[in-house]
Image (cartoon, rainbow, N blue to C red):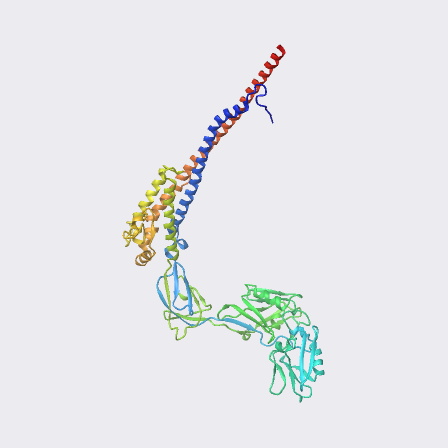
Length: 578
């Protein structure tokens, strides 16, 4: 860093002279920087305008992409309406014929259910823990001829221990072969009453104790050893027969039982396996396992024994095995399965059946339509109607989007080409505006339909009798939705020809916007390249000028410094001379 002291010898403020001289030349750089900022502003405006043009092209393509068919063709979209959605609902795709059908539902499809033929759980005995039966710790009140006894039930108490406490109170407790609990007086004479509001155990409500006419109490729910937390292969799991580890099959899914598998975890595995195609449920009250098909219709649930005897113990299969445990033969108890029903319905009086309440076109013979049967038709319901119509929702939204985008393009062009604006005198933009305005007011005269012009189908610059016509902007389009719908009902093909046909109005607009947005040769790319070149040239000029000014300043400082040195020497010589 150099430090200079201005005018030490001459007494002149040479630094200020340098700054003044440099500032004159700096004005040229400032002017160039202003020009550069103006070019960058034009680039920014150009980019914003290109975005509006891209949006306009996207809005047009919603119509012109109809040539690709399928979901691209807004004119082929259909809607299916049910006159009674309590009986059935429906959906329709582009293949559906637009007409009406008479529908009745005689029978809904139901699910097949397999259930253990008999209880597969052993009945609770004296060694069974009360917690295994779901009975929690707490107090139970017993009255014998009015004398109260409070029985304390511990967390680890067995049924045998409960029996002893009840016996001490004068009450006899037994569990029958059906698993039902019976309480009576020890002598069969005394009056007993069970339960009080102060009890904290859930025994009475859990087993559903009810007093009988003979004075005894009997449970409504059976007490079985097996529960969902039981480890299946454990000797004390509580099933009628000990379950072995191994595999079995439900649906197309194979399941494995090991020493840690509980009934709860196995049920969860079945319910979460899509290949099983079934739901499993353990009924504590009956000691039975239920398996319900996920598919409707009169079809059996596939249940196959494997290396585990689980399906045999659950009474779903009967299997013969050799000494090594290998399956010799196995059969499924079909009588353990309550078959579901097939759906029965009519279409225009023709009776049809379906294994599912969701009925596709292959069953109903209604092309492009899927029916969902909800309930059987009652006498009040009578015959329900299915009406397949054109779905104009997306089409109308697309028209609104087109009108908005058209108006935005016109407004943007007017804004950026106005006097003093960034893209003033860009004839390509004004030419484009005039072109699409001409198309908007012109039409498709090649189609033989009822309509030729956009105005014929509700897309225009407004009605001539509008009250505010004096203030209306004829550069902008307005959309008359009611008129469009009316035209769509009267002659949909003519409407299609105008907005989506090869010679249609929007196809011509698309060609114009594509040319403008074309890579390399389109207005935006060409203009952007020109502006980028201008920016580069201007930045080079500024850099060159800045370097020149830096050198100029250095030269001035050097010269003034030399002058000061010379003056200083002259002053020194003069002083010596004197």
